[in-house]
Length: 398
Image 1 (cartoon, rainbow, N blue to C red):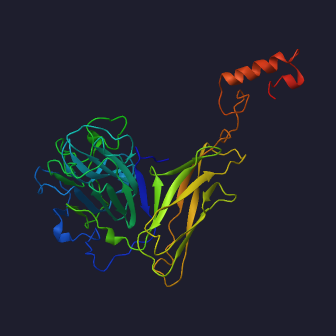
Image 2 (cartoon, rainbow, N blue to C red):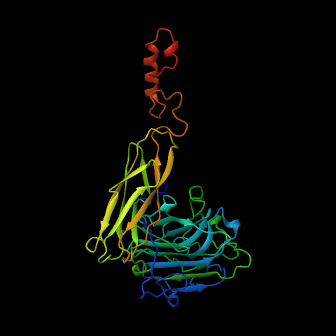
């Protein structure tokens, strides 16, 4: 399971992304003109203070194209591109096969609460954005608008948007404005971007002394790194189905806690209402979505509609934590721009209440999945009811 800290909400853009005709498409980042980049590098380099003018917009976009060697699949942090010094900065890194966004601000040495911490109120962010390809080219960016509390990430065309809480335009996003791209030579202790100085045990994939330069696939020469003092505009996401997961994940428990998600559209469907059907892919269903069908039209497309997800409380003993997929089907007129834009499946994590794959422990006498004094009490009562511990009494269970 992945949980963000506080009330942060993970927003995933689940449908195909189209580009508005008025949007300037950059080579890596759609919506940002390459001519406005603060820096553009085509070779690995180590940072030096004052690589670019200070960012005062409260917005930063880090972009990179690279081809990591398979030796980079584990360990980390491996530098993709970072901007800043020891106490303030922002960066993209590889860690155990995933692209990670990390930031620290306002001269604080705070630590994130985990690798999916979307609350910037303590001046620390860490978000695992998703896996990259090894031995192949990757095109990625992370675009952070501190004032709006929004982070947009793209990994090889898969776009996600995160809501960041506790954030404002005063956050120092670029430190001493030193930029490292892919890393080159000795890691400079004074220029660490979003990496942390303490917390080696908790955050080895963000701890600066673990940082390493990227080894790229032999013969690859198409690398490029960019930094912008701007955020990706909303206009690059027309006609998209937007699904918001509470705290960055959807997690439920059999016989107990439900979870919620919210859905809306990003553009007016006009004359063609859009119906979205939500259903579990498993047979029998592991979870139930209520309502299982929602409708958006020209008057309601901007408002989120809430879906409650509840686990089916079956009697099947399954792994203590297991998953299923929620499927989204879009029904609309073929003339609608939403036609055929079926969102990707969404993973739901389920906690079992039947004691997991191995069943009840032999000493879990009351079969509540816990071995405690309540079991001892049942044992004593059963024992006292048997003059001779034989036959039905030998098991000490009802």
